[in-house]
Amino acid sequence: QVQLVESGGGLVQAGESLRLSCAASISSRIVFSTYDMAWYRQAPGKQRETIAQIDSNGITNYLESVKGRFTISRDNAKKTMFLQMNNLEPEDTAVYYCFARRWDNYHYWGQGTQVTVSS
Image 1 (cartoon, rainbow, N blue to C red):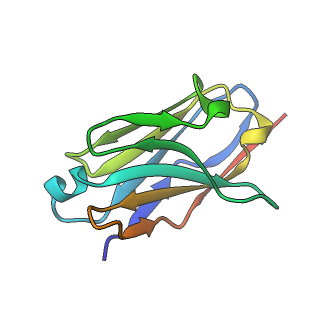
Image 2: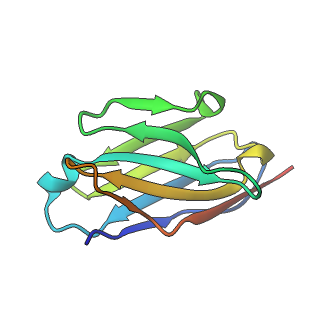
């Protein structure tokens, strides 16, 4: 069983930055590198949404509203995924979740980390 542990959330003011990390408890760096990874978020009263994806080839995709502000990346040697969030807006306030999908579509979720952006 793979565990995903997010970190880096917190309370910031609008315009500031945060960097989220997602560390995978998996023994093999090679196996981690084959996983497709993503960040989701869920704001109060709203559905969980995909905000950024990075596949095993490093190809990325973003929710339109975060393009140009957020950057997803991964370090396979460290078995970790990152989300650099710049120019944060109050609308970015949510719980952010790490997601990993392996070759057979079995997937894992992190426990979530709170990001709060004050105006």
